[in-house]
Length: 308
View (cartoon, rainbow, N blue to C red):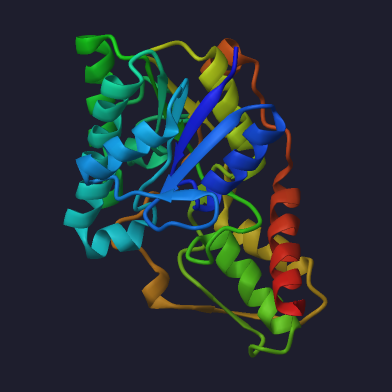
C-alpha cells in the first residue's frame, strides 16, 4: 500500500526533518506552509478555502501530520488571539477538510507537553490532567480536546501526539538550546563578545533530538491506536543550567554567562519529565540519541553556519 502524507507546517523545523525522514522510508509526501517555497504549497490553515485547495491538490492522502502552529510561547503571549486562531481554528480547518476529502486517512494532531502545565506528579503520563498555563498551551489543549471529540463523536481516525522539548540542527534560535549554541558559535567566530545571555537556568526539561521525534511520528502513524494520546519524551529531565554548562565545555573559548530579564517567562514550570511507556508499549519506540549528541549537533550546525 502506498503511504501518502500531507505535512502541514512542512517548511518549519520539524516539518522539514519529518519530510526528509518519511521520504527515506518510502513515503510520498505533500507539504504545505503559510508561505510557498520550492516543493511546499502555500496555505493559510485558518482559511477554509485554502485548506480545501491543498487537499484537492494533494489527492490520495493516507495520513495527515498536522504540525503547523504558532509554536513559540512568547509569540503566543504577545498575540493570544493569533495563537488561538492558528492553533485551534487551523486544527479544526485541517480536520474538517480531511473528513471531506480523505475520510479514511489518519490524522496525527501534534500538540505539546505544554498542555499539562504544572505537573501534579512526575513522570507525566497521558492520563495527567491538561492544565495549560500560557496562551500557546491553552490553544494546543483546546485543539487536543477537539480531536478527542472528533474521534468519540464522529469516529475520525485521529491520534493526539504530545511531544516534549525537542531540538536539533536547523531549529530557530528563539528556542533555548539553539539560542545558547548560536551565541557560542558567534563568540567562536569573533562576531560576539564572550557573553551568553540566558533566562531561567533552574528549569528542568525533558529533551529529545528531533530525529527521535520524527521517528516516533511515523511509528504512531503506523502503529498508534486510534483515539489515543501519546507522549514523546526521553523520560529524564535536564536543567537548562546543565545544558549550558555542557555547551560551554564544548567550546575552546572562555565564556561569561549573564542573565537577561527579557528571556524569562511570566509563568514558568520548574520541572517537566514525561513517561513514554505507553508509546513504547504500542509502537516499540524508544529514544536513541543521547542528550550530549543533541547539543553537539546543534552547536556544530551553528558553527558551520558562521563558517559559511
